[in-house]
Length: 222
Image (cartoon, rainbow, N blue to C red; front, side, top):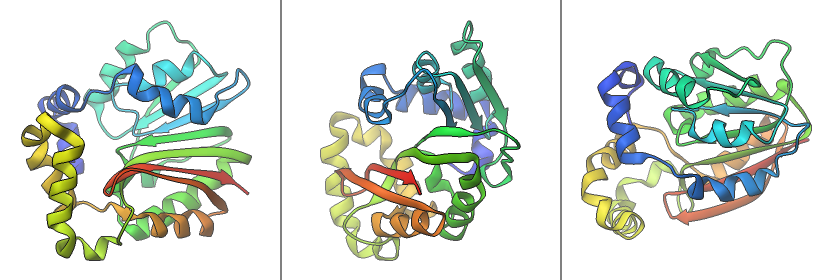
């Protein structure tokens, strides 16, 4: 939804949180699919204000949230008060170094579409060694389920209709952001993501569209 530089702006972060805030009810399907256990260690790529981490950390042994935005992480710190098993890290995805950390679950929502396709591939290759065998990664993001990103323009009328249906009464308020995302950011096709995961040692076990431009992919570490 934004250029990387926007996330360092406090006002933009506040705008995003106001317009795209996610309720615990909306996160419930993600939590159910991840099937978090007390022994799990989870990482949230693009944790934002920590709303998902607050729910996940209560169910796992350790949780790590990473984000590029200082204003977002400041909000996350407030929202995660009292949860001593959570670590927050300010870093770009491509510069993230897991060190000795190991994870059994991974999560990312509305974040990885900021990476170009070559970056997506390298990102997954970079992080894969930090995940245990049979680890689960759930990604909910802008994903083109019926066509590759290269065919966006010829599918723009369909995208506009799908957005109006998906967002309903909030579509007009979000239209400018979504058009920027379609035209300037790098959401990929579902088949492209399947290839990226496979090349990094993962197997996609679920592709679930919420619309032709948005949905969920779940992969398991081989």
